[in-house]
View 1 (cartoon, rainbow, N blue to C red):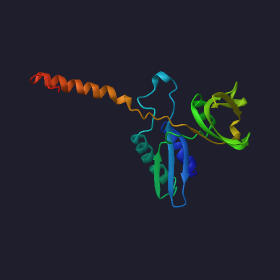
View 2 (view 1 turned 90 degrees about the vertical axis):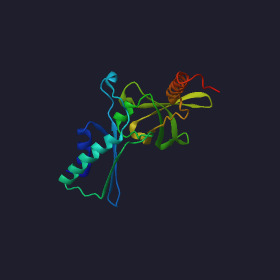
View 3 (view 1 turned 30 degrees about the vertical axis):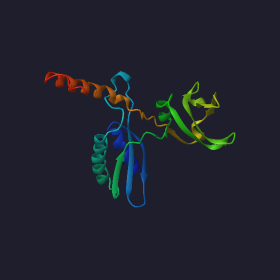
View 4 (view 1 turned 90 degrees about the horizontal axis):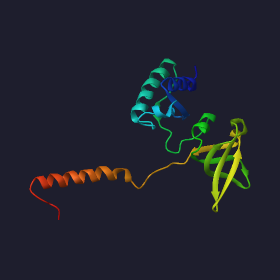
Length: 189
């Protein structure tokens, strides 16, 4: 069994999606994993992201499998694909339909190879895909086939406002003020 087959069989056997692998001439074997989408959305787990524990679990299993299969490597790294996850398989396009992606075509269309927009399927998956993007305040659409794509990645969505921590801080402030009042009066200044 080749190292690629051993890695894929192990990762999928543990219930993860194999996003990709890299192998360097200096012996580094890098494996990117992702969680599979739940079959029933209501049954989704507490985390949709890969955790350190997920990476440790896959690393331990791969170390055993690669040793048994006599696959040589110097160092093994298992990680998530990151916020800008690549879309490599047709199943990735189906899974992330409706999301914003960066798309690079193999051949230029109207002088451009790079587009960013929302991924949508056409009437049937055999018909291809559509990328809806905005240029100068006007929505436009680019229809393309899977084999016309050089690279596609999710556009990272990051919340820099940090509003999700506002409620716990407010609750803590109220608890401190309440305790101060109980200990001897109003301590507000």
